[in-house]
Image 1 (cartoon, rainbow, N blue to C red):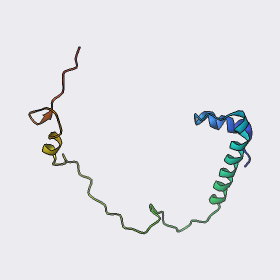
Image 2 (tube, helix red, strand yellow):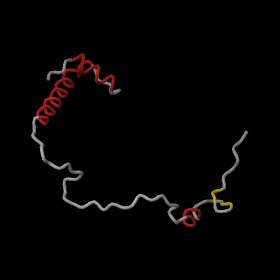
Image 3 (cartoon, rainbow, N blue to C red):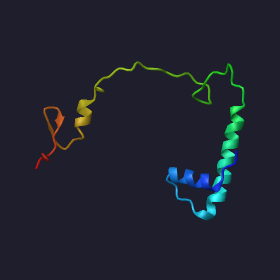
Image 4 (cartoon, helix red, strand yellow):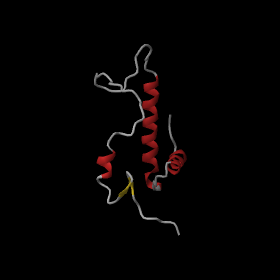
Length: 95
């Protein structure tokens, strides 16, 4: 698929990328190459291929998703300049 200068200009505008008028032909050519490669990838038969999340074979170690307080309140509060009743103490900022 060929991308023209106007399409390259519009894509650059939508992506909030400043592209000079002299560079639009190069950007259009690069975008065309990317789209051609994506079209080429779309023709690959992936029937029966399991999705993967890593290129190296490794087992995912899942942990139970449990909400907790972390059990490190004292360690965290030790870094605070001032605490009150187990909480961070901050200056009042109400006007």
